[in-house]
Image 1 (cartoon, rainbow, N blue to C red):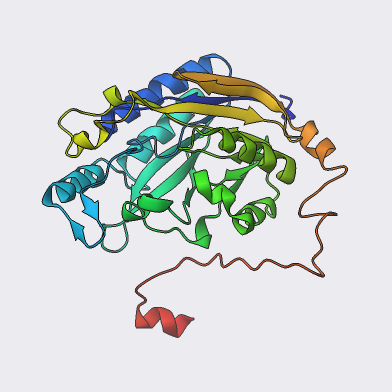
Image 2: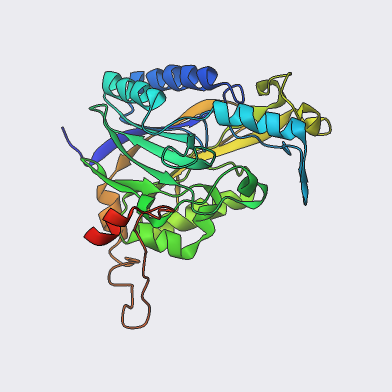
Length: 321
């Protein structure tokens, strides 16, 4: 098999919000569709499991929260997943069945401490079914900070595959130059950029990243409508004045010189396909290698704290340190 080439698929869709089974079913059906078309790498949007709660306020104002909002939050928490856990086992089995690399955006429950904090996470699975790694969003954006905690440098994950090195950042993390530099410095070839941003300016962002990192960029967004929100959802009235289409999509695949390999998809669910030529990554770095000959370590230096941040340490651990 010639590993210079890999067919990839980017998913643009949305589950029924906060319905974990709906998300799992859709991951299964769309992954099978993509694999049937020959895709070996399949990417799902930001927090696809169990959905991005666009437009919802969770009853929060500065200085107060409502009881209804707390109930709404509890429903969101219950529809989130443990990593590893039952859902990751099923997703690993799906990746193994199809023989694909499967990359899914999920809302992750903290397993180690209070179990009360959620994270916006990318989860990576290999074609052997293994859970290869995860990345937690470093800084949730705006009101997202009410929903998700901050990730740390221990999950700036890049994974070796036969098709090159795969990793990435989530949505507006991609506006953090130093976070991008930390990913570039790991030799990224295929850059994953799941998002909830459907604006035209997002297209400028992913094309810039492709040019800057001299890598392929796979950006996946949800196509979401009001009908994907359960009617009994607390806070449903928050959407009363919104248009029926809450997110128009804009998923795309960009080549290492910033050109579209698959043009943005708007206004519908769907799959985008492209066959990536990994030789083009090496060719593109002939005249610009952001962490190679175009870097100036004598002038600029980035220090990344990749240690896992722990709130509690046992005295026995401190003795060993």
